[in-house]
Structure formats: structure tokens, C-alpha cells
Length: 256
Ligand SMILES: C[S@@+](CC[C@H](N)C(=O)[O-])C[C@H]1O[C@@H](n2cnc3c(N)ncnc32)[C@H](O)[C@@H]1O
Image (cartoon, rainbow, N blue to C red; front, side, top):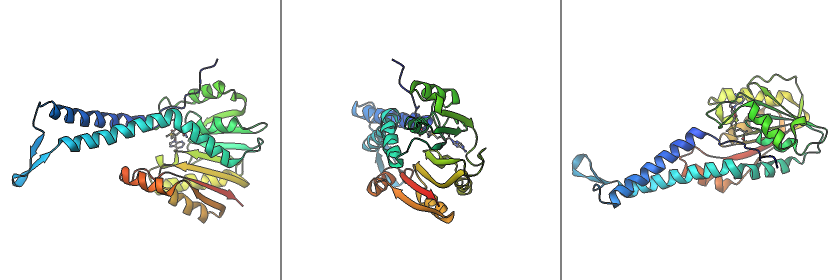
């Protein structure tokens, strides 16, 4: 049996840092509990800060987040991709483009649903965004999933796509657009998506933040059926838990 596809660990540096903070917090608590030191830090004005419970709660929260991100990269994101692709109800004949395809999570998932269609992935292969991020890894995953004949990858920046206008029937992008840190740069990428999408074509963006901004940008570019999906309660909960860093959501739209 061929080994299963490996879609990599998202944001490996963030996972490592969260795990380190988690271990440090638990170690501080354990050292106080074991009586190695009193765990009291003097503050100006005669006050004392008890660090034990604070270190434990920050440590557990960070370790929990690191474990969740590792689980999600290995298992959760494959299940999530299937739910997202179900929404597109592909006929099988579409030309699909995946922007920031990484090791091919959406690209290969879409290709598995195609018959005569094609799936093209574009990326600049940033190592800090995904472990083992290389075009060879994407093609190897396509081979493992038996869809290599329908998949191609290209090295290109999503802000300057090397495709003619109206080249694709479906465009997907998962956890990629937020890696452009300036709003103007994200707007450039969205403009490129709209340009290469064929009339009647559909767009699906899944990202960890900026969904409202994408929605406004797509509406301004006359896309129709612009819809925000996802769980608003989960979005608020995650935003509170992560000090606003994570506000995940999904957006779908159609070009008239
Ligand atoms: C967190 S990974 C997600 C990969 C894949 N979509 C997935 O869900 O597994 C983000 C991807 O976006 C890519 N990326 C970041 N900036 C990009 C840009 N300007 N153009 C194309 N790809 C980009 C990174 O190289 C990385 O592969």
C-alpha cells in the first residue's frame, strides 16, 4: 500500500514556540510545587507576585494550542478540506486553481473529485508557513493519492499570477492569504483571483483572519453571491482565546 499523503505542519515555528512556552510554564509550576523555590517575585511598592498558578495557566493554554495545531495539521485539516470541497459540488470538468497550495491539501482534494478537469497549484514555498514546503512534496502527495495526471504546480506569487484572464472555473485558497501582511498586498492577490476567474466561476477562501476585509474587497469587485460561512460563536471564542490572532472563517463568491 502507498504511504498516505503528508500535508505538513502549518506554521511550524509558531507550534514550536507555543510548545516551548507551554513546557516552560509547566516546569516553573512544577519547580515551585517541588519546593525548589518559593515562586514569589517582589514587586515595587512592597507587593509580591505569585507566579505559580499564572505560569501553569499560560503554560497549559500554550501547550494546548500547540497540540491542537499539530492535531489539526495531521488529521483535522483533511476532514475540513472535504467539508469545504463538498460545498463546491464540483462536476468534475472544472479547471481548478489553488493559491498558496503548499503540499497540496486543497489541490489534491479537488483533483480527486475531477474527471476531465485539471487542478493547478501555485505557491512560493515559504518554509515558515508549512513544514517540508516544496513542489516535489506536493507532487509526491499527488502521486500517493493517484491524481498526478490531473495536477500541476507552479512557482508563482499570488499577487502576480502567470495566467491569462478567465483561465479558471474554480479558485480555492486555504490558510494562505493572511501571509501577506499588508492590506494592499492582500487586495492585489484578491484582484488577481478575480482576474483569472472565468465568468460564472466560483471562489472559496478559507483563512484564519481578515475575512471581513476579503468580503468587502470582493463585493467592491462586483463578485456576486458573496457569503461568509463558519461559526460566528467559534470565531468570537477563538478571537478571545488568542488575543485576536485567530478569527477563522470561510468565504464563497461567484463571478457574474
Ligand atoms: C499555512 S500554508 C497553507 C498551505 C495549504 N493551503 C494548506 O492548507 O495546507 C500557507 C501557504 O501559502 C504560501 N504563500 C505565502 N505567501 C504566498 C504568496 N505571496 N504567493 C503564493 N503563495 C504564498 C506559503 O508558501 C504556504 O505554502
